[in-house]
Length: 392
Image (cartoon, rainbow, N blue to C red):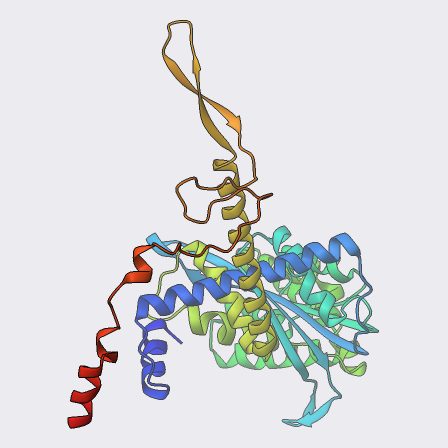
């Protein structure tokens, strides 16, 4: 939730008063610590090459991007990876539907190549490398294909069906107009053919329209986009194998994980604060908050130990030398550093100063010492004092 609402919620539910700036700073600190935890895990995997856990029989892999507002009017793309376990088909809305469960998210604001490496910890944890089948559903972007090549190059690649339908609809609207009855009827027939018979007949229909309407450049654009991804539009085969054909999981992740928190009214984020917030959102929406909290506290503890060690080393370095006066040619004493001994020297003015090799003897005052003749305390034991006490 927004920082101000979070502070109010803490005050209402736990009676804890925390200001909005403190809430923001603590959140960013925790998020940055979790980013470091995940980066260190990637480095460990690259260094040690540990065997990955066993993945499921059928795994969903989907990646996509969402734009978020930054300060000074800038917009940047946050890339999100969604991993899940593909379930068995179920009969819904008069057709077979395939859903994925156990979804987990990994989001970052970074370049595509860097994002592919940063997601290594999540793909390793979920067993992408060892899953029997991996179905990668995307909108066909080039960077998404590179991501799949990096993590599982033999994955079955599927073009998101609604995305393909959008390009088919664009062609129909260019010819008969958007939203007309002719366009709607033509689109319904083409999408039914695409889903249950494959892309061959649909691409042939688009080529016919391009030939008949060379004056419409949008037709050629739609045809070119779909022709390049014909191998990813084998929807009848996907349905027969029990694979999903839509990227609803990652699109939902964009809305629920990224945009719900970073794209609110009036929000503009500093670039350095985006990834810490995304890391916390991923942990929360992936139902891994308890695990993430433990890792964050451990990371903060290690950071505290590092800071103490650095301070200790700096202190020893600063006090490793002491000035010793030497004479220059002009006769002016100049401080020259010399190594100090680590053996503590006794203070000559201290009452307990003594040589380490000398044993101190018990000391008793002499017979003529004033302490032995002090009148303090003797008066109350006189006969007069005792008599007066008895009268009282």
